Length: 248
Image (cartoon, rainbow, N blue to C red):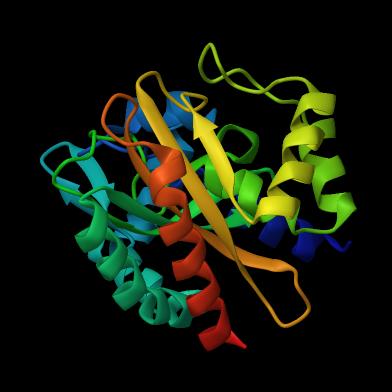
């Protein structure tokens, strides 16, 4: 790599670090906090932030900085999954209406699921999931639904990265996870029985392409003492099958 390329890569890495330093719930961050989170010198943060403000990727508010509206506009142009979200929305809405519980649409990225759409049900618990948010795949029903219909190399990558414990019931043993994935392949349904959070259960089914590989998954989440996953699971699977047919 030539010196110019190295400089470009370093600048891109620093800009990315600044933009990704913001976490859910952050309204504004000061230069000192951004320097602490990114490990960059304050002078560099100040200089780079100025460029990002100029281009609308960051905005100044008082003495702090916040993510700019331009980022939202760019996000709306990320069409890789936009068609999937648009196609799925009517199906998700019907499923929420029928069950009054929260419906998720998610894809796998690396070892985590990314939530593309969430329709919150009036009778469902307030969940930490958010559109654009991530969660370890092994600890979610949507993650297990996708992994079960993914190449074995994908499952190996997730397992080799480690299976962190999210709750007291999270599956952390590779053999047990593989056993669950085998059951998901047989039934077309995955379950989260308080594995991602205490008091919450979930059932999911994959959206599969013409080759049978999972493209995404949909799930239904509710309170442990109010939603019987076995009762609502057929509706989730039927919805996933119907939606999968529209994606071929």
